[in-house]
Image 1: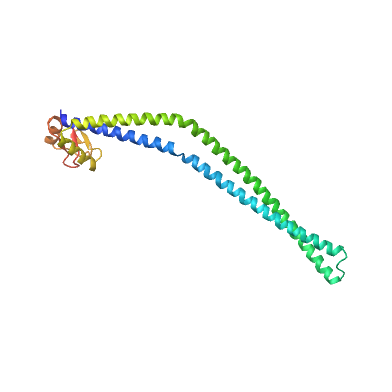
Image 2: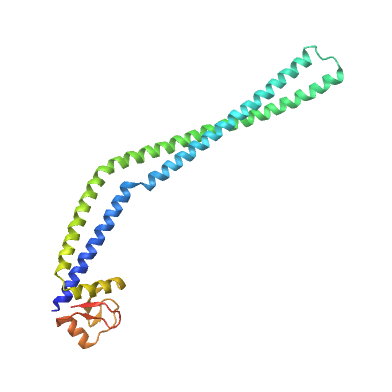
Length: 232
């Protein structure tokens, strides 16, 4: 058996374990650092709150316009029926203006009622969105403890895996380690087994001598096609 190749295969498996644990640590850290679903819910609640605020401003604006119309109508009513204006033509003009104001007031009242209904609907939607935020926050708080504990465990496992990997690497002849690092930078995986006389990486047939040396030789053998290191 090619012991040198087997050692590099062990080192590669140790590297894969280190990389796997590193990914899990990063994922747990990202989950603790932020919650995309909660962030989206907060943004939605903020948008709905702003929409409600704008609708309330519109209602106040319509109310103000309606108050102005009512004040003008009251003034015209006093002029028409208070006896201060006696000229028939002027009275007719005031009458027409008052009728126009009343029609405008009726339209404005309808528009204001619709705007108030919009406020009610937007307030309900905002309340639902804020309830969703509260539920997600509660869920996140429940998850934080276990997730923090899990992150601590993963970090310890990763540290042990790194130490184990370094111990394996320290046992490697420098030339073997250098070859492994060079191939790994270009090919993943760097070390593959011989499978039915073919390279386990590129799957092309190996020469008989090449396959034999990979299985029983003492030196490292590389695939002549893909440059990967061959293990028995």
